[in-house]
Length: 605
Image (cartoon, helix red, strand yellow):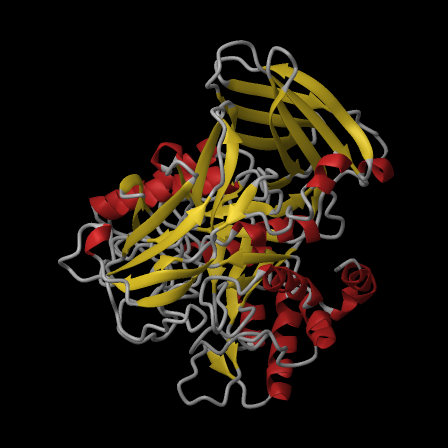
């Protein structure tokens, strides 16, 4: 495996698909031709490309070079590329990280892909569309109706100017575009699962078999330089389903060297080779997984079998000049590092399916992640169809990342506005909860975070009361739980609907705080501080109470960074801290935990 990683020349860090990496890939990010859509254009040869754009930054951003300041419903992209010569046994696969919202793709005038869904990837085999020398003209049309509230849009505003908690729109290409050369017989997909009770690693792998004959998969697993497994499996009907048993060290000290946690993000590196009958390597990929468990047991959450209070931060995932797209890979890593340096052990990525490189760094550096589906804002057959289809694509893309510990299909009843009284909407939330558990039975699911839970593994509460004493009184003890679940309405909404109140669900204060600090008159927050000292005092007082509330299995503070007009971040939009990081850290974890916390902080790269 050392040989293969060395031959990748360090590309593992920036490779757009970190869980299935190959050596031969080429980015198409950079300058493209660009045009806003005119309603009469239907084909690439009709478009008048009149400006340049820097991909993968959306045209609404300044970094793109367009900085569109008015709503528009579509745009066109064009560029030429050179893939070089392909052999008869090779394919050229074109990949898009994300295009918002509907995409049509042409290569040399031929449609090679159509995709609907603004947050998920898609690919196309463009081999047959290439010119003789392996070159081609690539054109993309992105359609994105700014007024369509029946599509998953997250925090993207439908009004001309961002207001309240909604932000500028994102249209068109906003994640990396790239291609790779692969063998016609190749590894098409893989999924990892791990089980601490059996101390094993599960592998589900699909092979695209263009050649007849018997194929095998060789799997090597390595951790901290030690070879854990070197196995050979037969490919049957284009698939491999195996559980790879590891030697259980038995003693905790030895076990802990393999277990993954935010304090010790130990990964198992994997190399997979697809072999033909003559043992020739047809395809080689590099991946990784990790041994860890995260479950609910009664009213507590357990990481690797032990109680683990969550300290999460709400993370919108926007940057001032680049919108939803990270400026570069270093910026993604820096966000993970800053989150840990403030004292949080996890992040709730809010109303956004994040770039896979964020999950890569969360896996590598040790940060727990709640992954949340961007909401549609209407309940219609169309919105249900779109949301379910895209959510399944999200699960397929990300369910092998060790950092993800929970899925959040709905937030605050967005997209189900009549949830308390509508049987259809309640069934929709229940259905998506159970569908998620069916696709991924290994993780917890918050069916509808914030309030009005109808099916969930964790009861999430959103409460922006800025009084620490009222927070302490409202959630003071387990004796308050029946009253809380049956009568209390922290956000003006019932916490549960159609569920029997119970002490057996973990309770998470999954949004609170939101203390703004800004000199801009248009700034918005749930409460306000005039100075950095006031912000520090308010944050410290609030966290001191929340850290001591016995019924909470954890919390999620709003929010990591200022985002456009929303000025309630602990960091400014450019990631400068509003008061010293070391004091944020002490307040976040609670001062009585400082000795252990210093050890955790020292582990942040």
